[in-house]
Length: 366
Ligand code: FNR
Image 1 (cartoon, rainbow, N blue to C red):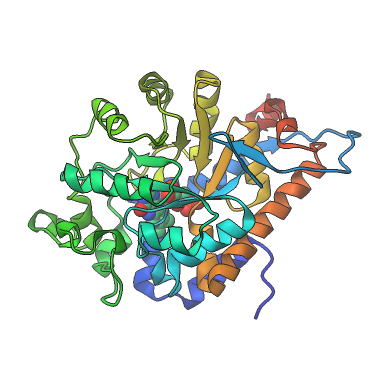
Image 2 (image 1 turned 30 degrees about the vertical axis):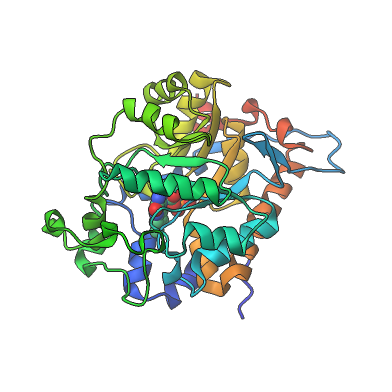
């Protein structure tokens, strides 16, 4: 097999082996994909200010998230339908995260079930990504199953009253291949295509029509009333919403634009983080995903205020390469890159990565 040394190498490999329907579903963003490009470019607009002569002989990348120790501040974001990338899909991805001692977030619309993940990776730090359905009994049963299977938090996705317009999926008339199932819904109506959704031709938009688009801040109290798990709001992009999140008393927010798949034209998630972090301070834990593909991206996000950074697509490229082993390679590569970034900037621990070690490039054109 080829010697792949960075996330981009894995991405290129995956582009050559995945079938069109799956590849387009995984890689695309919404609309003209301006935000998709920006998610990556924005990291380049931040510059690292390295410090010298600060003993970095012994380094430690471990940190805590929701009070639990993890080996590194890099986790796996929820992405749907991972068995299109590898026959073991989410199970392989979860085992890789477990072996790396980090957090894995399972998508509601996964091709492996809540229970299968718990069984295949019993020592995994796992969170469940939740969509709230019009059918609240169905939603409650997902929450109950996640609790019973030992998930440690719910990541409620708040940027998806419906799915964004992803042109490639519309062109392909995207469908889940017939041999795969949305594993959390076997026996439920929720996987059935409904009549409202014929507009775009993509099965994703049909699926999204089952979500409760009337959701508002009051529903966070409802969710809190039915679960004892900490709640993280995934998809916050503004200071206004971050402050509301702090007010309703959730445990954390994942600053994210859903991998640029919802509304095109939003800021890159790292730009939103830079705005949000100083406003929320330590009222709640802050995480980021979107466009992270190198350890220096992780370093920048941590300096700008994230406690933990997550990656979505990179795991899919790892799965396409070699299942569990491929994802482990990806996580190890980004971990090593972060270790180098820390050593070469004078940071022996995660706490040493301070806000003044990263500046926006405009600082140098003043
Ligand atoms: C996603 N994302 C996502 N988010 C979510 O809350 N539930 C989901 O089921 C999915 N599914 C999904 C599928 C695919 C193929 C992608 C690429 C993304 C968004 C995901 O959790 C995360 O926010 C982004 O993937 C982060 O951006 P990067 O790391 O892919 O650039």
